[in-house]
Every structure is written in C-alpha cells, then in structure tokens.
Image (tube, rainbow, N blue to C red; front, side):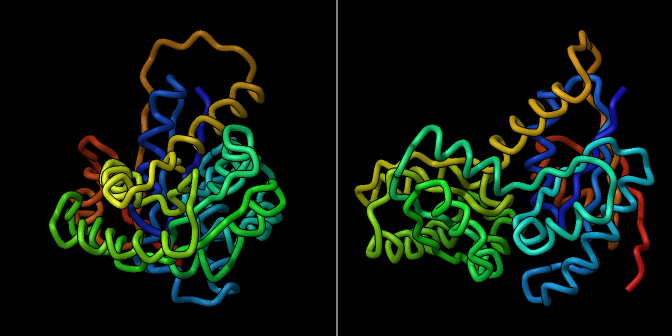
Length: 267
C-alpha cells in the first residue's frame, strides 16, 4: 500500500485530499494541517518556508513516498525549499493547474482568484506567462474566512464574491478562471453562477481536482500498474485544536473525520 503525504497550512488542502481519495484506491494518505500557525499569508517567505519544511520532513518520516503541497501559499513561496529538504517527489498545486490550462485553453485570457499572499508572490502570473496564457490576478481576502465560517451559499458570500468578480471583469474578459486557493472549490458553483450573472461564460478550473489528477498520474507512473480494490484510507494531524479540525475539516473533506492527532512542530 503506497503512502502519500498531503500538507496545508490549515483546512483548504482537504479539498485536494477529497479529490485524491477516489483517484488512488488502496493508498494510505497522511494529512498535516498546520492550524496553530495559520494564516501563512501574513508571514515572511523565510518563515513560511521553515514551517512548510518542518511539516514536509514529518510526513517523509511517517513513510510518505510522495508529497503533495496542497497549499497555494506554501507552493508559491516555499516549493523549492521543500524539494531541497526531502528525498521524495513533491507536487505543488500551481504547476499542474497552469499546465492543464495551457493544454485546454492555449493563449487564453486568464483570471486568477487567490489570496493576497499568493497574488503578491506573482507565482501564478509568472507560470501563466511562461505557458503563453494572459493572466490577470485578483486577490479575494474575505473568501477564506467566509468559507471557513461555513457560509458556502450565504448572501454575504454571494455579495462579496460578486464585488470581487465585478472588479476583476473591469480589468479583463477571461475565457478561463483559475481558483487559486484550495478553499475555493467549495464555492466553485457559486463562482460559475456569479460569473454568468455578470455576463461572463469563462470556464472555471478547480485547482484541487486538477492537482489530484496530476498527482494520481505521477504516482501510477512511479509505482507501476496496480489492481487495487480496497478504498483509500487517511489519517489527519493538526498542530492546534483537534476538535475544531474535525468539525471544520469534515466540510472540506466531504465526510466525517473520525480522529485527528495533535502534532507539535515547535514554534
């Protein structure tokens, strides 16, 4: 049974795990949410890299054979440091999304919705430019707390999203909208609906689904063909309140989380 590690600063990466579970039956997944130290976006690049490397090394020590950085901020600001610190393959959430977008929508005008930290890093923008896409970035800082509050289809979330998208559409006319935060898949239907209400019929790319497909393909390549009928399993670690992680995390994962272990990674 192969073992994969999945890391995020909090809960959003559980949308990636949710997409991975049916893709790789028989796989054991270990998830770390560094909830004691989020949000990463307000911290320096050096601090984010240190935190992410600590979690990566823990997951490797737990037997992970492949590491998924299911966090846009950590991918944007610490991917090279993570890859240098472990001896297993590492996949972030940005490269697969841009690669798929380039293949499906070559040279498309592309709107990237992300957190302020991810937008400020310009990593999505730079990857898109190298891929021949024409990117416009839009920071949406209020969406993460609204999603974590469980306001997936709340009037406040609808209005905030409408304002963000209306502002973005004043700057571009996208054929493609990338959800550049792993919280955003939970509001993907609302994003599509709001875009249409604003007269935009752009395709919406779910970064969690695209990343899961890319990771699954890479793992199959690494491990060779397998005929596996057992369901994938998962275990979760959090660096802060395990009860809060179980309660909020179940919304992101789409199923109950029976047990969460407390993990101390230091300060």
